Length: 136
Image (tube, rainbow, N blue to C red; front, side):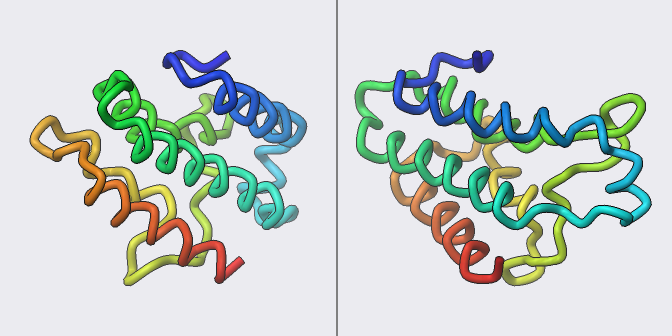
């Protein structure tokens, strides 16, 4: 279960992605040593889930807890940290980027209180995730 109050259909998708990551999470040393490359299919699932959260937020902006969804999107990438302390590397630190901005940085701005949680900002972020999908 997510630490944030996601809509039921998002919660189910969240759990599916989380379950898929847990299957490989303990292999962190092989990823850190580049023995096992990241799985593009899992990364697609993660990206598609984030797009689903963004789409849901855009469609329901007036009725959702904006701060909760903003916080969720801003911190979701941290769920993919791995290593002996869980903070050595990020599974989402992939080579693909959009204008030099890496996948784990797309929602970084949302960490700042002054960044608005608007449909325009969400569409801008969504566009970056969509561009990454074309590169995988």
